[in-house]
Length: 252
Image 1 (cartoon, helix red, strand yellow):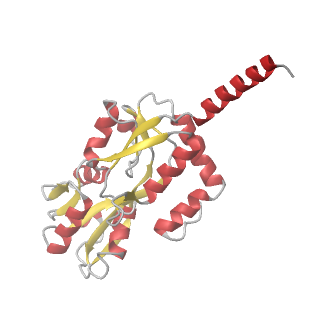
Image 2: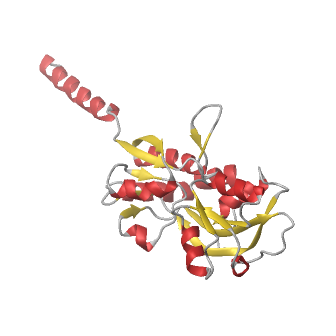
Image 3: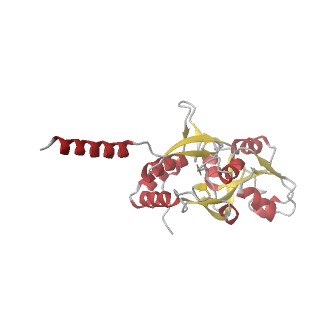
């Protein structure tokens, strides 16, 4: 075996090892810290946790990118993607035609809708039609806010709040008569901090699907979609879902 051959093999191995150990591309990721239980700050560790955070970690691992996570108010997320200041976002972001014009979305990873929340024992509000002339809390920049302003004629009482905690506090203090927002967040609050004080009522409005949002033209859309599909096929998605929401509903 010649020294020249050994040198060639060593060089080839070094190049191969260098390629496999090189750092993956780091994407600038963002979320809204107030959308429980999709994303929230863990007080003990100081880190963001939640359903979306578990999904992001698993998708990143499978798609082959690293990420640096920051937080911002929900209404700033789409503009930040549009300007290219961030690369990817998970924050219970509903896929809409308007948003798809300015950002890219993954395939849907969560089916949702909008739900009413009222004080326990309040029988005066059972549907959207009962909100005429009432004070209703919702979230700035959300599809629930858009739905209310389009479907309530007397919508002067519709009050947008910067965070979900703010609107829930407003309901329990009597500042608003109801809250209208994303069903999983409303349901989680009703069964935890609001248990015995508030309750969900009525049907599920405007069926929605959440997607992972990426800046327009992102090269990662296909890899992200493949990762989501794999997670659903091998049971990882179901495991994450049931960690945060309980038993996963049967597919229709």
